[in-house]
Image (cartoon, rainbow, N blue to C red):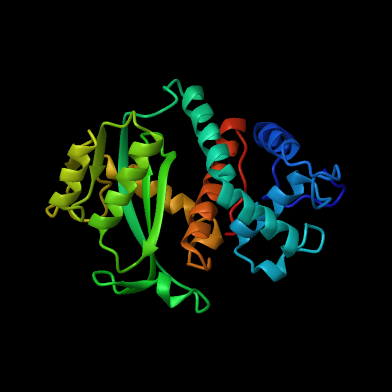
Length: 275
């Protein structure tokens, strides 16, 4: 760790003890024929730069000078996105959080929801669309979370894609990576095709409808969990709008925000909001 002044988004020593060993093992496998391990930047500082940007929402060129520059930070961000390192670390941390809570490593039930986000002007039009119902131009993020509010799967598409189609993509991802899931709760936006696809995969789908008779805000049974996760993710400013050029980068950014939340849960620490 460098001697610079610490940012609130930096990982603590206890948090780095959770992430560091995995990245150090990853780095050890990447020694080149010249004996170099790349970059010359500490992996902890690379992680701090990614988390700083995720939390504050700043542009790549606006990363503080005492953090690794854009060239190094984006190199590792893209590399870990493309080789699945971010997903692997996230899933490992999620399993640890579930075990700490006295649960099995993998869940048997999930809650699904989608959220439409406006895209920044530089985001390619080919990867965006307009949500016909919410009138939001941009992208749509789909989440599947467990009963503890831990993310099991993330899918990002154009906002014009229906919840049904996005939900099917989420189910496929869940079946591939978390085959222990046998039950899913969703809202009324997910239709019959989604339920049939779930049945084919061995997942029982239950639609949880909002009450039209109760005045004011009332948390909806089961669904409130994923809605709370969406609210927590919004504390990471990079996720409040679609800034990533590639949907894959949006998925990775969501995983990094989730990792920041999980390591705080595991170590009993917190990061102040910007409010």
